[in-house]
Length: 406
Image (cartoon, rainbow, N blue to C red):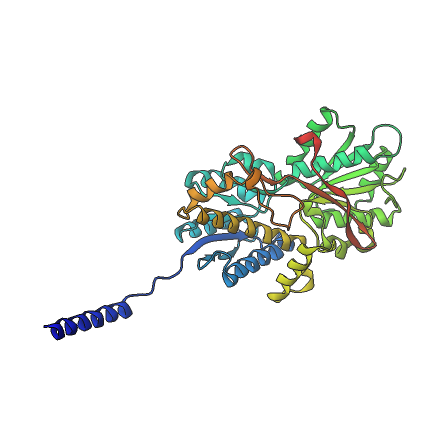
């Protein structure tokens, strides 16, 4: 009888093993994201390195097990800076089960804001336009808005102007929502006591010669030109100023022009395109630069080297920008997993809104921590001012927060 039971036990084990080998192996969890941006077309000078930053960080996550045995699937689509293409990409990603969207342009985010709200999916954009966060509770700006950056530049001018009287400034802005949006906040700050005189607002076109504009500004006593646009028009502007001998050799030099700009006006590409004309250009962003050495610099350069990126990409602040957006997305997933919650749009949205106080996030790619809440969807509210010295952007002073936009 014992031998009969023994044979039955062996038979049962054999059947069990056979079934185990026949059953499909359960795959590790994979979380679906999606990135749509301009890899080609207008602003591809920013979108291309940004996409590589996202791609490289996601590869690092999957290869090193930052999420344990789980993986992140983040397909990257080129939308050529066309809103209609962005919308198609977004809808395709939703069909694939996307739980968080990495978006790009100001215009596309404004156009899709209602869609984001309707499907209740968190979005991390490459645009820092304050208006897109106002348009949807599901949009989380990675760093300080253009408004904060622009007002921060104005505060620096007001505090460091050495001449007599109130400093006279001109606003040189992009002819779009991206360019115009910070202007109202800037005017509000001036009305509230920021000691500046806004002499003229210039919405630039595609002018190849700004000589007449520069001479007009100088005739009105303007000493500071604050730029909120992209690099190419700034390059033309400062090249013309240098050619005319109108560029200040020191900050606020009397009778000369000092140029300052927000995030997308600056970076290494500005220096590469403008050469010596970029000398003395002041620029603000929340990102750390590889020209300022530190552990974050070594880490970024090693990441770029690991995935075969050229030096231009490795040292681009837009590469950093893409890395940081991916960092926030992955950290949100990690914290949600750690809390034992299912990974979906709702749980990630909840986690993002809790990313503040002692739960703030330090990505190290930025000069301050990421903080979000249900009333604050601007991640890093700290800025760093940089200035071109001897052909390289160098930090000017310590990180700061604009006082007039608290």
